[in-house]
Image (cartoon, rainbow, N blue to C red; front, side, top):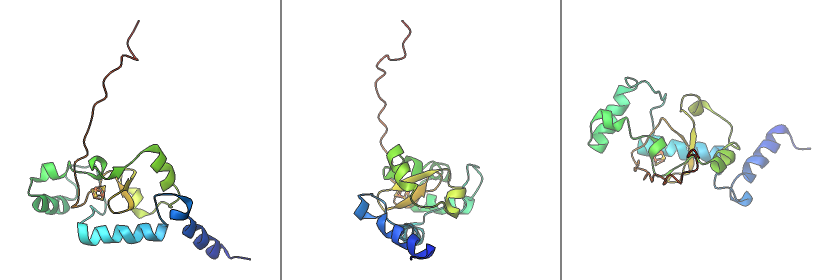
Amino acid sequence: MATKMEAAKALEGLLGDEQGNEIGSASQNAKNRDNVIKNWSLGPTKASVDPQANGEYWRKMADKWDIDEAQARRQLCANCEYFNNTPAMQEQMEAIPLDKFDMDGGGRGYCTKFDFICHNLRTCQAWEEKPFNETEDEGDYAED
Ligand code: SF4
């Protein structure tokens, strides 16, 4: 009979492409995240909504993007074109257990550029603005 550890490893192996999911295993997620931390400056490590927090990190990103710090702080995974936070993707991501990156990240989204779970309040050097298309008001809520 398989031990708990063996069962967990077998399950982890099933979470990738064989099941048709876009996301891979928890270990692959961590590996891809480590790559983005190391090579694309994913951060801040301890994300925050405080506009004064993580000054060193945001000044570094401002330099990389050649913009000012205030604008750098507005360029978040949350509004990056590679950030998928649809309900369907939220469901898929539930297969990956929460870890320390979830605790102060402000909520999950899936990075379709680097294939890992990133978070609303972080960013990386590959950030690209997500287009916003306002839907025409079809009058569904108009009073009679
Ligand atoms: S590419 Fe976009 S969504 Fe992916 S980690 Fe970088 S900023 Fe976040």
